[in-house]
Length: 206
Image (cartoon, rainbow, N blue to C red; front, side):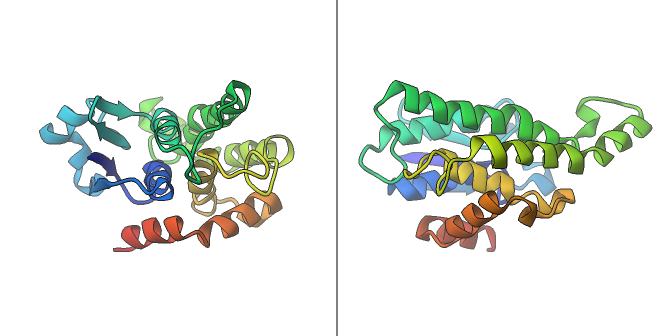
């Protein structure tokens, strides 16, 4: 059976939603970052990076959201989350998810993890102050050039949708009004009505 290590509200939410959309049989194990559980010896044996998500499969352990989402999409054909058979269409999804992972997530991370890039408190503070403008720039690009609608890739729901939903949920906390991006905001509202999303959010709420 699959086992997902996750933290509510983190990027692991996307993989959690994808497993629900797939109708997968899985176990979910919450990792408490407030108590530094991600640094515990037990969890570091699962993921030496000390990050979530991590997905235990019968072939080994997968880490990194784009990889886990791709695995889920390819492992559950015929479900709402299944990956397209066409290589180009699958690559388009991967390109979108790669942008979220490599650029948007990094822009967001400067808010709380500035110490990864600098030791000077003034530099860390300066990076924190840039989070809102950097996240705005990222979502301007998504809204105007990358988002097709009604789902990320067009008419078909995909593994890109729970990933975007998760990141859009960070905007307000980063000092950005999500309603500035009407297409992305409507997408978030549409996502929030899906049963899989409701179930995952209820777990996060306790």
